Every structure is written in structure tokens, then in C-alpha cells.
Length: 296
Ligand code: ATP
Image (cartoon, rainbow, N blue to C red; front, side, top):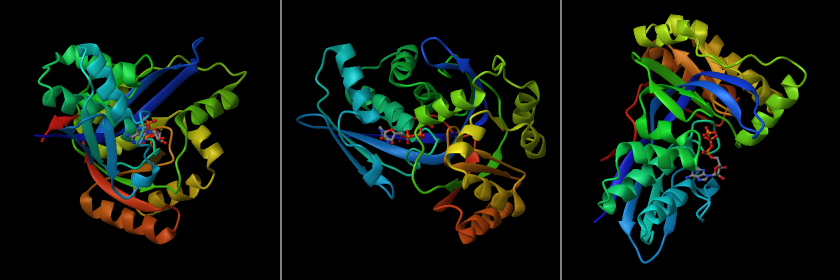
């Protein structure tokens, strides 16, 4: 018997970043939107914990105990005093180290898959707490749809969202999230960083499903840091905008870039222009919101 869980990628439509806290983390006001780009995690009973991965980026995914899916299985097993005797297979479509929470998705997916396989029926609240232990973005991968994250991003409040169309440009090579935060600290040193707050106009645009209104409010405080580390991303952003995107931004810590488009036809045109431009490795089109981790 095995259990497969499907889990979405995310884009941050607003990522407001506060000054570094004494513990090194940053307070955030983080509006997450789950998009229809999925990894699948399959849990099968095994002699001992083992991770395998398939997909175009599979060679960049660690298969040892540092894999977030493996850590999720170990954490859940330890909590219940059992052995994590499971084979986790990840079918990976989410770009690796792309700022789309691919590792977080696999952590949430593995947690739900193992919980189901082992018949633990862990209450939702407890699963969410385990997700937060694994990483700041992992709780959102479990709940999906649209949510405002505060604290390190792990305190979630669901927010209503209409349907939106997206194109994602996948860059060559990843960007390390901690390195992007360090660059943010360097760029903002000596300035007064405002307390991060969700933008009411952005939340209203999300709720109404009005893409033009959302386009005017998209904001990512990590974008200058990502562009500073990877200046070529400016060309990708400009290419997508010239091809008809309503707005373009770096997704989370990058280097994936996200393009909000009015409809599927424009999505196809923007994707074609990005692929022809040579300013990215590949593209993906998707819609939001997408449901959170779910057994298939
Ligand atoms: P976020 O948007 O949450 O900052 P990300 O999308 O930028 O994350 P990930 O794809 O989660 O980045 O990968 C970041 C790093 O985590 C990778 O370089 C890899 O070494 C490690 N990692 C651990 N587990 C996984 C996994 N299951 N899938 C991908 N990367 C993983």
C-alpha cells in the first residue's frame, strides 16, 4: 500500500520584510498564493527511510536526511515514538531553489502522506505546528489557497482570492534564501526599515479577482536583493512586461520570476516571448488559487 499527496507551489504577491530580529529572522507580512504547479510525494512502507526523486530538476534535490520530506517523516515518527520506515518518492515539477517553496511543499506533502500511511490521524492543528518546525513556508504548503503569513511567515490567516493567471520564468541555477536575506540586510543597513504590514488595497484586489488592480499592488521587498545578486533577472522582468504581462516580480527570494497576465491567451504569448528571449531556462503557466496538500 502507498499514499500519494499532491502539493502546490506558491508565489508571494506581497512580501513585506521588516528589520532583522535579534534571532536573525525577519518579521514578515507575507501574502501567499498557491498556484497550480505541483509536486507529488508518495509514501510506501520500507525497511528504512529512503528518498528518491524524479523530474527535470531531480539532480539538484538532496536525497539524504537534509531533504525536507525526510525531515518531515523523521519528525512525525519521533513525535509518535515509531520508526520512519518509509520510502518517499518525490515527483518534482516545482523549480528547485526557485523561491516557489518546492522543498516546503515536499515537507508538507511527506507529513500528510506519512500521517495517512501510518494511520496516525494527527489533528490539523498539530500537523500545522509540525510544519512550522520544519520551516517558515511549510504551513502554507499544507493549507494552500491564499493566506496572510505573519511572524516569520508561519502564522497564517486565510484570505479570500478570486482566480488569476500566471506565467513563471525559471532561471538557470538557484538563489539561496538566506543569502538573499543577507543581501537585504546589507542593502537596508543604516535605513529605517518599516514594520511589515499587509496592504489593504492588495487584499481587496485579491478578493475581487481583479487582475489589473492586483497588478498595481504586487510588491516584494526582497526583489532589490535578488536583483542585486542576479542582475540579469531585470531582463527577464522587462521581457515579460513587454510581451503583455500586467505586472512582473521576483517570486519570493527568486530567482524564479512571476508574471501576472489577464487570460490564458496572454499567458501563452508571454511564455513564448520569454522562451524565445533566452533570458530564462524555461517557463510554466499556472492559475491561482490552488488547494493545499491533499491525498490523491
Ligand atoms: P522558498 O521559496 O521556501 O524559499 P525555494 O523554492 O527557494 O524555497 P527549495 O526548492 O525549497 O527553495 O530548495 C532550497 C534548497 O533546499 C535546495 O537547494 C535543496 O538543497 C534543499 N532541499 C531540501 N529538501 C528539498 C526538496 N524536497 N526539494 C528541493 N530542495 C530541497
